[in-house]
Amino acid sequence: MQKIRCAIVGAGGRMGRMHIEAVLQAPDAELTAALDLPGSPFLGKDAGELVGAPCGVKVSDDVDAALAQADCLIDFTRPEGSLLHLGICRRHGVHAVIGTTGFSAEQKQQIETISRDIPIVFAPNMAVGVNVVFKLLDMAARILNEGYDVEIVEAHHRHKIDAPSGTALRMGEVVAAALERSLAECAVYGREGHTGERPATQIGFATVRGGDIVGDHTVLFAGTGERVEITHKAASRMPYALGALRAARFLRGKDSGLFDMQDVLGLR
Image (cartoon, rainbow, N blue to C red; front, side):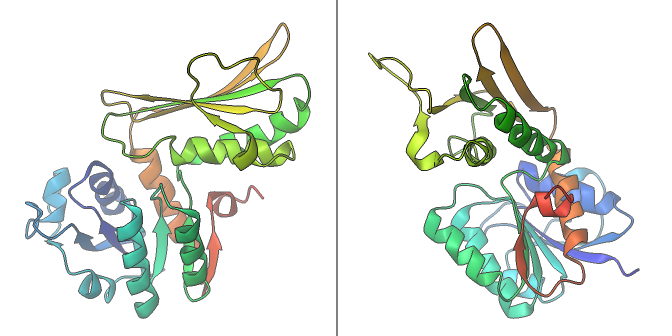
């Protein structure tokens, strides 16, 4: 089978380098483009040298030229840039794997609109383990649907720009849906001062930022005399990159549609 020609966005960043490494190691994938912002000190450098494996692909800021020779874009950058790249993907008929977080409701609608023309996997967390946790949370919430308070605690490195994390929010959405609640109506993002007694229907979020924490997430179901905790901890960013490659493989042969990792992993 022909290799998947991959274009990686954010080549100079922590996640971009991990994507480059994963693609270079995959027998069924080929790195055809590595992109970074105009003015980046990495422009013109061999993308493979960023991960200690020269490959001959130079880091560029020409998105249009890069996508003209790619089958799939992998983008874990920022909402505005990801949307711009998706528009170019649509023009070239390129598949897209989007792990960017922090999109507004309006921006998510734009992604859905673009997916009518090209296939997109859009998920806040591509790690296989995290997506198994989503499935476990749905099961746990349906069983622990009475007499248990739900709290979500997440921790990330000091450089993360959005809070709560997209993964934490997705966990909240999964639990809320299982409990037949609206997360928008029951979520509480941090507490301070005299808050009064906790309403039983609340889903609370707590955010930690510091150091080089890759990503820790815990959902706590606190009942009377017991508590259940479901936790995922990432020790490196490689699980996200490997999940993104799995998503790229899933999109092969598809003409359009919006999917997430639950679709990729057959967990629906």
